Every structure is written in structure tokens, then in C-alpha cells.
Length: 255
Ligand SMILES: [Zn+2]
Ligand SMILES: [Zn+2]
Ligand SMILES: [Zn+2]
Image 1 (cartoon, rainbow, N blue to C red):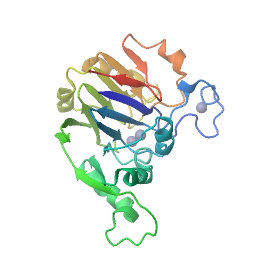
Image 2: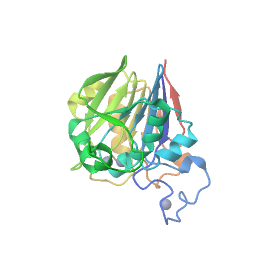
Image 3: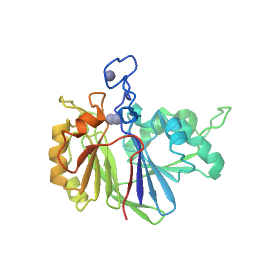
């Protein structure tokens, strides 16, 4: 199986609009961070995690030629505002795309995007065809087992993150419940929110993320949902062995 990081950035993306800092003006491709998202490829299935506002560019850049399912982590704008970009896949695949997520988040999406989900809609052009599929715990996409991992996200929480095989993607969190640690044993690769160094009410700082990741004990840990505080190459030299900043386009293959 394979995971591609489509976006490693925080809600503003990097560069931040209007910012002239060294990272935002850097030409280094690893200092450019689209909004947080990834693509799992398992057997013949392509499973997208979140549909943020950069989805169109991510799909073009990383040649995403089909999407079999979407896993929804939560309903913040940087994770759902690309929902309309899914409609082109309906055209190619001639089928609805299932959106898996917690019932509360799917209800919110249904309410927020009424032009998509209203059965009486008279919207004159093509809308995405999506099947809202509430899940909890362990569920399956085709034959592929997927584990939902509840995480705290401050007052905005919870976030429902996901583990597929031995890879876990934990975006937007500032706390892992004890019951979720139990679901994260024997990981090969962990992706975890490591927003910035200063405290934040809904995200881990990098030091909090490092200590949580040390407890989880994956073979390799990558930090995601990153601000413009990090110069990729410089900051990576400060991280302990086995830990690194993720970057857009990073591709991990696990047997
Ligand atoms: Zn976010
Ligand atoms: Zn900046
Ligand atoms: Zn969030």
C-alpha cells in the first residue's frame, strides 16, 4: 500500500497570502504547503482523506485519476471546501462516491452544502454525487479494513482520523485519548499534527507532537499541518532520528 501527502500545510497554506517571511518567499518546493490531505492507495482503491480548498491543484499535480472513497476527518473549512472538485470523478466513474465519516460531521456537511444534498434541488449544473456513509470504529471499504481514530481538537473537536494497514494519518489534534493509543500499536508510519512551536488551543506544538509520537512508537513519524514557521531543510536537522517534517508529494510505500 501507498500513501501520498497531497498537502502538508495548515489552514492558511504556505506561502501565507501577503507574508514576506523567508519561508513564504522561499523557492524551495518543500516550503510550499497545500492544505492538509492525503491519498491512500490500497490494492486497486484510491482513498482520499479530506477534500480541502487545494483539491483541484492536488489532483492535477499528483495525477489523481480516480477516487473510490473519501474519509472525512472533521468539518473545518481547510478540510471540506474542495467538495465540488469531486464531481469530475462522478463523470469518469459513472457512480456516486462514498464519503465516510462520523455521523455528526456528515450531518454538518449535508446542511452546509444543501445545493448538493437537497433531493428537491433545482441547481442547474452538475453537482457532486456523494453517498454519506456514517461509520465508527473499524469498517471496510471493499475488502480494505479502515480504523477510525478519535482525537481531541480543542473546543473544535473531536477529529476522527484514520489508520489503514500500518499507516496512520492524524491531522488536526491536540490530544490522543487513551482508547485511541490502543488503536495505534505496531505502526510502520505515523503522520501527526505538529503545527508550530508556540502553544495553540486546538493543535499540538511540535514538542507535544514529538512526545506523543515517541509514545506511539511508529518506525517513522512525519509531521503535518505545518505553518510557515518551518524552513523544511533547516528545521529537519533539529528533529530526532526517525522524525521529519512531511512535504507535499511525499510518497510512502509499506508492504
Ligand atoms: Zn486543519
Ligand atoms: Zn510567512
Ligand atoms: Zn481543524
